[in-house]
Every structure is written in structure tokens, then in C-alpha cells.
Length: 194
Image (cartoon, rainbow, N blue to C red; front, side):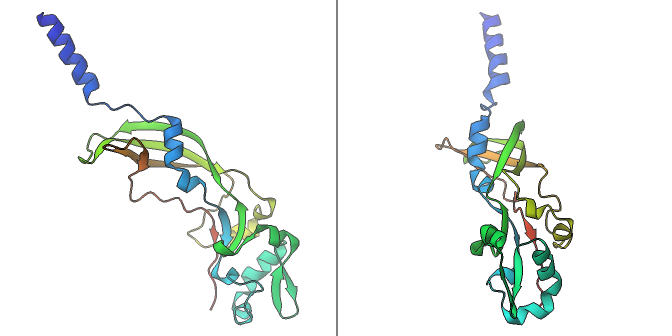
């Protein structure tokens, strides 16, 4: 009887603290709010098209790059969208979108977080690999990418790897992002001259 008690105690110690790891599907669902984002080449300069006349003089370098990429064209004393520009332009993003969403290529539960607050039933550190679902050809332009600000991604096509902390709240079975510092803000940003 003593052996059964010891074996039972050992099994409880080994499995009692461990929560079931989230499935790949649960992880992908928790990150949907991030993967549904568009990737765009954006600037306050593109808030209004045709471009506001008062901004043209101080932004010729940026405008020229977008003209060369086939997204803008000169008309009289302003710049407006080309056919390609009309396809890519999203006024809600202040720019030209090169992907409508992102996909998670792979996920891996790295480790369980043992130091969880009492409001959580479990937490895990998960690494994931994210890439654009598709990438428009016009953005594969060295001049366009190099002109983007320092905070922009410089390689819009390659997958990126992130680590994020996910958890389940007590009484809720849904997995959620609990890492307040996790940020996924894809895109190319262009500073505007005033």
C-alpha cells in the first residue's frame, strides 16, 4: 500500500502543476487580431489624395519614390493615384497596402509560465513565425524600402519570429495574449516634411 501511495504522489507532483498546453489552433485564434492586420507603406502625407498642395514642396523625395513605384502620378499642380495606386490605396491606413493579412507559419510552446497570477488557470511562452499572406510586387522596391523611417521593417517579405506570453483566465477556456509588451505593427512608415 505504501508503494501505491508513493507512486501516486510522484505522478501528482509530475503532472499536477502542468496545465495542458494550448493547441496550434488555439494559439492561432488568440493571435487573429494581429494576423488580420494589413501591411502598408503609409504616411500622413497620403491622408488625402490628391496630395494637399501645401505638403508637396517639402516632400518631393517621398513623392518621387511613390511615382517611380507606379502608385502616384503628377496631374497639373498635384499628385493623384495611378491605376495601381487605386488598387493599393487604403485611406484608413494613410497609404498603400502590400498585403491584406499575415499568416502564422509555425508555433511552438517554449515553456509553461509557473509564476501566474491567481486570475489565470495557465500561461505559456510561445514562439511563432509570421509572414505576409501575399506581397504585392510594387513594394519589392529597394528605393521605397530604404526611404522608410528607422522604425519600419526593412524586409517586408521574410517571415519574422516572435515570442509572446499567452494565457487562459480562470473560468474562460479561450486563450488570450497576456504579454502587455507584445507588439506586431507591420508596415513601412514615411516621415513627412512640414
